[in-house]
Length: 77
Image (tube, rainbow, N blue to C red; front, side, top):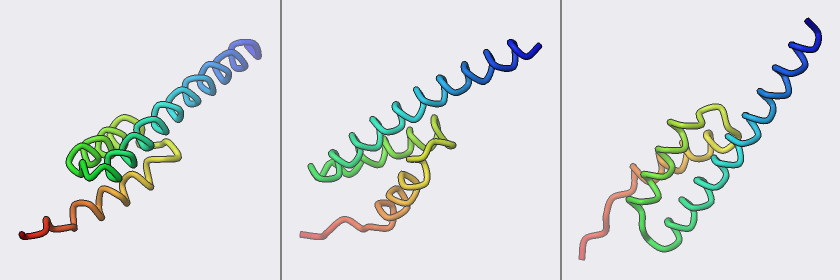
């Protein structure tokens, strides 16, 4: 029984570690897209992150950036 609990805990830990790494990759790519003025792509990536990895350490920041980007209005020329 104890071995099952330990193995389950290890499996969950490794899975969560992968999720956080994937979330980090999405977040960093979205930041890059923002810097490149590819706002729509950045928004898509932030949305993907918050949908796929809602419990990751990056989800809160991604949601905040998404909120800010959705409030920004395109500049008129």
